[in-house]
Image (cartoon, rainbow, N blue to C red; front, side):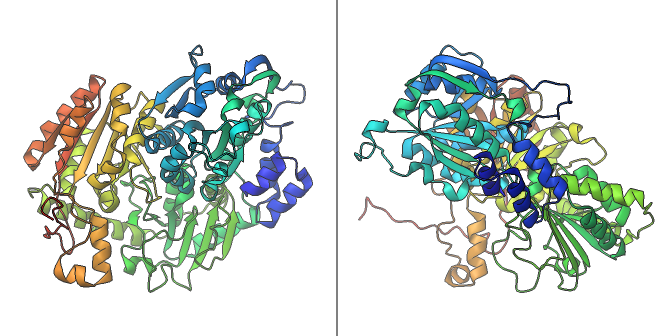
Length: 633
């Protein structure tokens, strides 16, 4: 869909052709019209203008350098931060920031952190952020977290400087002839800026295409001289005429069929996946589940975007195959069925079940499973329409005893497990999560990168369905599988929502990929609580080697798994960045340690809790590591 949107913005196709192309991929006429309106320069606005209202007019700037034009554009568009790592090619833009206090440069000491920080800021604020990178080096370092933005559909505009126009082609220092194409498979749009005069027009296009359904990063490259060249006169089109509406409406017939399927089903399941990261649907889904007696599950790589205290919440779909095989109507809200490591030997959804798939990512719908209703539409708009239809039919009294019985038994088993593990040493993950749950604010923002421990948050850290969405906890996470995201993302989240208590829960393996973000957290006094779930290994790799059932699992000699030799002292690492922290080894010490962390946060500073947790699963007792001594060779 974004290619069609790009062609429309670039005036390569007219409105009629644009509408026809969208209808061909399943978008309703109303939905296609909404997208056309929001992408059109002549009619775009956050709210439609009345017939007698005058659109906001463009601003014309004169006699500025390309760098100053870019800075003025960002100020005009209310972009407060530039996340980046400065380099030699970008001096014209950096120089323009000196006398413009409305625009703040956020220095990161690694591009991985800059991308993830911008990602977190965009998620927290629902606004598109911008990242400034240096040449092919910076773009390459940032690519991993661009993948995270792309997978999670986070709108971020990414820029990179490159050699001066007249020097390009000489194979000069850090030159990359096709730099703008480097992240092409993981960007909504890429472009090499052609002249200083095109900077505001190209930036506008990059912001809009980043936001256009299904959303994701865009990537621009600038020759060094484009930021230094003087521009006689150039137009900056206002943000109000460049807004993209992502709530694409479903077709009425599809809505009626969805309701028919849900009402007729004995055991319907609502499955929340990728699109639910960007589109908040928990309120509508909760009401729908209660009306039709449906269970609610999450995709395996999802953050906990649904309140886990709700009596219809069933956890991770597929964990319990007996439940999965009992479902006779399955509605996937969001696009990827299913993002798992290994293909299941049996269908994850029964072949005789009615299957519905709704997403703005048209390439994901029906990609992996047969689908009876395939819809290119917003999950938010569709859930609202389905709820409205259910209420219009006065549907009530659907049997929900099966889901209440299931969730009651599931909760009882989890609680018993926590009681059994309460005094374990190393500390059980359930105990750690329960202690955090008891101490942290009811409306805290939690950024997680826990890999195998992520389900402990779903199981033991309460997100209360009885609180309004704006007043309850919220979980941010990436489903990309690219490590090193959470720490920097939590900084961006806190910058975007400074009034909310913010935490980062990360595994030790993931933390090591993104630890450079500690520097930015310290420099900018970002009061976040950083909890490292430290099991001293890449547990997911051990699990994968066990799944293979080869010599590693037979001998317990897991290759590339052990992280305890040397045993990293994360509190001392934090101290080197002027951040306080401590290691916690005993479960009885958790409460006081968390209190010290919160006290330091209240003083406006970050704090690191390095918590030594249990291992679980086959091979958990293995201490093997691939040791050799170069000194002795």
